[in-house]
Every structure is written in C-alpha cells, then in structure tokens.
Image 1 (cartoon, rainbow, N blue to C red):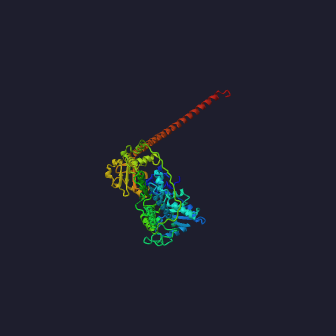
Image 2: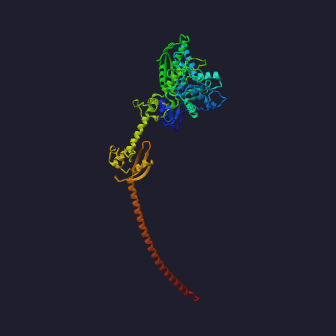
Image 3: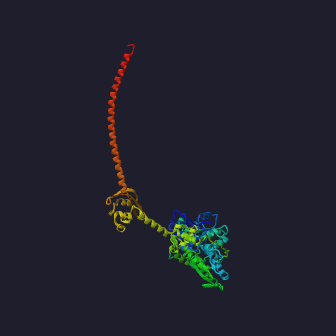
Length: 600
C-alpha cells in the first residue's frame, strides 16, 4: 500500500507525541523504529504538524508537475482550493492567478466551481429523501475513516465525488482529456484521493509546496501587496473577483465550518427567487436536521452516536480538520492563522452569488476497507500488563504518556505488534528511580554532584558515612568544605572529563581514585570517588617488602662474592704447591729411569 507519510528515523526521539494525537492509533513503535501504518492511517496529517523534531514528511514529489509546467506542449490547469483566500489573502485573485500563470499554468480556476455542483447534487438527494441520513463526502479523510473504522455507516455516505474530483472532471470535459489537472490546497488526503482517481485529476500541489515555489521564484514579492485594511482577497465586491478564470461562486464558503450547509441554503434561496416553491431551507428540511462537525475526534464521536442510533435523520457536514479546511495540515506554518483565514474566506465568498453552471458526472461509490486486528483475551492482556508492574486493574494509571488512552489499549497494541512493552514511562521511571536509589545507596564509592557554583546537589550514603555528615547537611553547602574543588572547577571550565586521577583527601587522610564527569544538559559535574587507601597501603607494603628483599639479596650476593674470592685465593695457593710437588715427583721419576737404563 502506498505510503503518504515518511518518518526520518534520525530525527525521531520516541516522544510518542504523534501517537498521542493520532485519533486512530495508526503509528507503530517497534524495535526502535517508528512507522505510520498506511493501511490504517486516515491521512489527517496531524502527526506531521505536532512532531517537535519534524521527523515526519509528506510523500508528494512535485517534480512531475514542474516538468508539465515547463513543457509548452503540455496544457496544465490549476484547480485552486477556496481556502487559498484565507491562506494567501494578502493578495487579490487577479494577482494570485497571475503568479500561477507565471509558474506555467495555462488555466487557473477555483475548486469552488466543482463545489457548486456538489452542493446542487446534495440538494437533489435531500429533495429525494430516500437516504435515512446523509453524510457529506467532500473530505477524503472522513471518507477513509468511515471506510476503515465505521464501514457499517457506508450506506449513509452521499454517493457524490468531492469538489476537487468534480472540478477536475469539469476541466477535462471542457479543456480535453489530455489536459493535466493539478489540485492546489491544504489537504494531505487529497493526494491519495487524486492518485486513486486519475480519470478526474492528475496531481496535487500542497499550499506548502506552492508557497515554497512562490518564495523561490519571488512571484508574489514582485507585486504590491494589499494590507489587512484593503479590499478582501478576490478583488472588490463590484468586480466579483474575476481575476481567476471561470465564474464566481458562493461555494467558496466550503472551507469554513457550516460552509456546505450555508451553500445549500444559499442555492435554495436563489432557486426560491427564481420561483422554486421548495427552495427556502430552515434548520430542518424534508425531515433532515442539519449539523456541522469539525475535527477528527469530534467526527468519530458523532459517527459513534450515529452508529448507536442517537442522531435520527440528519444531513451531516463532516470535516476532519479543526475549524474546517482553513485549518488544513499542509498550510505553511508562517501563514497558519485559522481564525483570520476564516474571516478572509467569509468576506471572499460574500462577493459572489450562488449558481450552477455545468452538469458533470458526480457519482462515486465507497467500499469498505475495515481495519481487522486480532483482539487478545483477558488473560493475555493481564499477562502483558503484569510484565510492566500492573498485575491488577488498580495498578493501571491510564496516564496516556505512551500515547494510548489507557493501559489496556497499550497492552492490546503490544499484542498486535504496534507497540513496545516498555513504552510505559511511569514504569520506566520507577525502574530508573529504583536503580538510581540502589546505585546511590549500595555503592561503596563516594558520589558527589555539584552545580556550576560548586555547590553540592547530591551526596550519597557512602560519602555521608566517610565525611560524617548527613545528606541534608551536605546538599547546598560549598564543595571546598569537604575536599579540594580545583579539579571540579577545571572540568567546568574545559568541559573535559577527568578519569581515575589519584587524589589524597587531607582532611580524612584517605586516598581516592577520582573520576569527574561533566553533564552538559544539566550543567553539573558528578564526582565518583573510589577509596583506594587500603590498596595504596598494601601497594606501599609490597613495595617496601620488595625493597627489603632486594637489599637482602644484595647482601647475600656481596657475601658470595667475598667467599668466591677467598676460595679462589686458596685455590690459587694450593694449585701452586701442587704444581711444585708434581714437578719434583716428575724429576725423581725421570732420574730413577736413567739409573735403570742398561746403556748407562
């Protein structure tokens, strides 16, 4: 399934904010990877705007559209959503049209022309009175929501295309099927809608993308701009805002709350003026009550009441965005001012009468695409919750910090493979505090943390015992009262840690191995002091023993040398005597041999 929202993993900090704001919980956090589940997402776009790290982006490359605009052989028509008057309201219609033409559009018309046709079809359905209730189908996010999460209500959806698709069909019928129709608006789900209906339109430029193109090419800056006190967007009331191609229409009112209902009433009033007896609509018409619902959570609550049979026979105008399309997700941040935009659209729409000019094919059917997920049994839910310290219901905090409204909802998401077990922040905090407490109380090392002014902010149990003071006495006092602060100050000045430096604490007569760590986020230094006094004594003793052994060895060697010399002297004397004796003996033997020789 095509993904329309991508996630930059490097940017995501797992804060769960997008999940908290996701009405249908179509975001998964598994194995340190965040993913928007395309088969469950309704493309409301809220996760894009609430992300503080800008980790989520829209998948809608405008390169293809820019190629069309640059090619003189390709005819391109712009279908401009009426919300433009609120977002770009500092310029009038003629200047907006001129800027779009300089981008390369051959034709520039307002989507309101399609909206007028949709309104007329809604009036026909109301007149026919065959449907038990009518749910508007102008918002593709709401359409997705119903198809995926309220499929039993599909029979209540008006079988009518959105204004964007209606206008696209009108443009292609009038200008030729080869004409490329590009919808320009503030909506994310319109990208999917138009991709799903290429016979009606060919592409989407979001208001953010359009604003970036205007900025890049200085298309609006070159024009003298109107201030807030000047005539409203679209030109003067007399001109009717003729700068944009096509006829003007009160259907420009669609982007604001009750816009569709008001347009139906306006068309009915005009029809009444033309002699239609059934034209004037009150708050109730042909047995239908009118209601307008904005905001996805509100729409879901309304649909649930419809499902439960609480609302009766209604014509319901449904819009997923808070405050209507003027609060759409893809409006440039610098231009986002929904109340100002609403006022601008109100003024802009008031300039034009209602009318119906063309009769395009408007029918559209909707198909159920229910999101099907396994539901764990109670035993499985309880087992999952027990693993994060919630063995019984009274231990469930339901704080929502994980992004799910209740602990049970999170456990179900874990079972479905959409969430990690340890996404529970209170549980992680308890574990962290427990480990921190154990570390501070159980370690034999002295842990001393100080702030930038070298005031003590942490003094663990081992340090309390060694220095003979309580934590309450130590915290807030100056570090120099207990030990030399120079190394701590050096770490603050340089930002460089010190590791395993041997230091003697004179006041205690102890020697420590000192490691000082600078924590940038809190601007503190934490000192870990390992008492090595006994180790040093033992090392000194061993060193002294080795010296004594070396001295003893030296004395033995010296004695051995003396003995060897004495032995050598004695051996020399005896050797000389032996030699003399042997020589004398030899002479005697030689003399005796001569006496015995018969020749003598």
